[in-house]
Image (cartoon, rainbow, N blue to C red; front, side, top):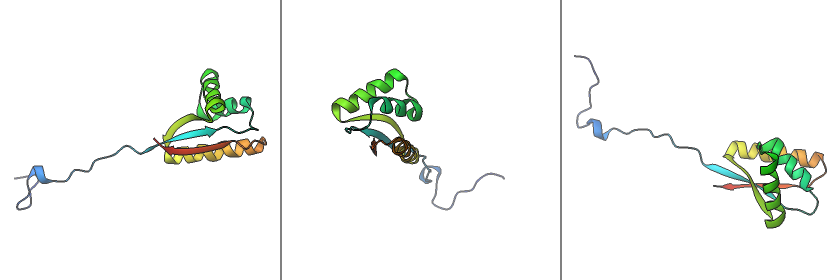
Length: 104
């Protein structure tokens, strides 16, 4: 007879099943400063975070009025990469734009 055999004392219900979990997600936040222009913040949100101009303007106004705004939610690796790339872009343009990430 073919088929799987159970070990003595083991039945179907006691076998361990491996469960795949979704990765933890991280929020990328932009922080307000006195030097980075509103236009540059909108540019960053459109170019690096795939926002429409209207969405980017809304987030930029949150950053301006509330001190920070949500750029997007990503896996840890993607969030870290976005922060590195945008920070480099900001420095090239002479802006001290600060981005951080926090768990969702």
